[in-house]
Length: 387
Ligand SMILES: NC(=O)C1=CN([C@@H]2O[C@H](COP(=O)(O)OP(=O)(O)OC[C@H]3O[C@@H](n4cnc5c(N)ncnc54)[C@H](O)[C@@H]3O)[C@@H](O)[C@H]2O)[C@@H](O)CC1
Ligand SMILES: Nc1ncnc2c1ncn2[C@@H]1O[C@H](COP(=O)(O)OP(=O)(O)OP(=O)(O)O)[C@@H](O)[C@H]1O
Ligand SMILES: [Mg+2]
Image 1 (tube, protein in one colour):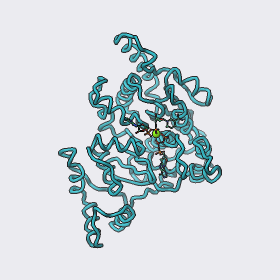
Image 2: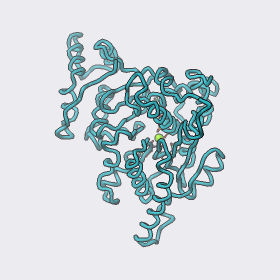
Image 3: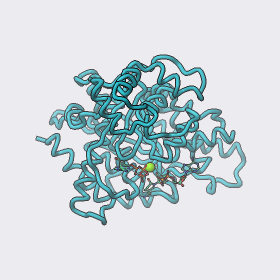
Image 4: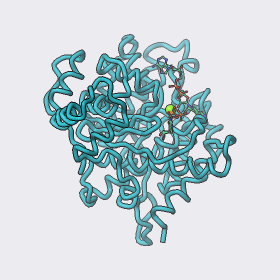
């Protein structure tokens, strides 16, 4: 049975979000009753106790990730043509960060997507191309340092050309991954926010990763951009997935719900956040990955690796993009009837964790992101054999 908290009322003020959420959740009230019956006090309950109580109230919080993977993984069928197993585009990669977009894009291919594009800055492109001949790299984005001294009109002209270039491809993509290695350059982020608007108009799913999740909002608040409130970029878009890490999540919660993160009510808080952003799906990365689209909350706790080397979140964003595309292609054919964005997050998270665990068995302390990427295929094969 899926966990449905039934938070159906809108929130009257940001400060009262938590109270509203608690008051309007039938399942939560049932849990509170069970807690009281056990002689506990909800404000002091630990997460393990919360889990027990969720089980007692008949809800399944941990996702059945292997079954989800089996259900949505694209079948290798000789009648299929190139592209049918997924065409993914990563928007990211600047002067500082070339690894992150590579990790996301190559992971998408290693899992089974047919084509993986990277739209990055001109400086980053030759570097990313040199990592792999498999990626299709578009050197089109510009950072402020490259256009300094130009008049506003000339800058606008460059932005329009960038947008037109991405638009030529947009309809062909099954999913965009925005953010890996994007950095924080204001001009670059302004262009990317326009790209996101076009993706949304074309109904292309968007996985938004990295500091861009919160930074776009900071910029909007500083009034630097035409976008008055960047959360509008994704708000109410059911095909948007945010994949915040611990820092990014804290900022998101502070900005949107105007409160601090606490571990006690993690799923409830996540669910309110997703609901408050109009039903986007959020994958909160951590010891367990928590996923919510505002309607349901699920966790993926499969054992991964104790290594926290940079780049694992980038693998995750590429993986989620592929599984989300596959889940969408299955449509209503999935027995779980869950939102394809949630299914994509569950499968992406589980696969990354399995691959990390395999890589760690072999490499121990020297495990790196590239080692985990090498284990993606084997991890998927263990669950969904190719033939
Ligand atoms: N090999 C590579 O090229 C890699 C590049 N990466 C990229 O590195 C960049 C940073 O990612 P991290 O995971 O290190 O980021 P973190 O979330 O760990 O943040 C790094 C620092 O920036 C601060 N920060 C984050 N958001 C902020 C905001 N909105 N305003 C002010 N300060 C903020 C944090 O407090 C922290 O001190 C991203 O673009 C990411 O994609 C990483 O993915 C790791 C691998
Ligand atoms: N404390 C933890 N214990 C176990 N696994 C974790 C832990 N923290 C993160 N992970 C796993 O690592 C994955 C990446 O999360 P992480 O917080 O490293 O993302 P990130 O900071 O965005 O990474 P990146 O360096 O790519 O930007 C998560 O999906 C999760 O499965
Ligand atoms: Mg990250």
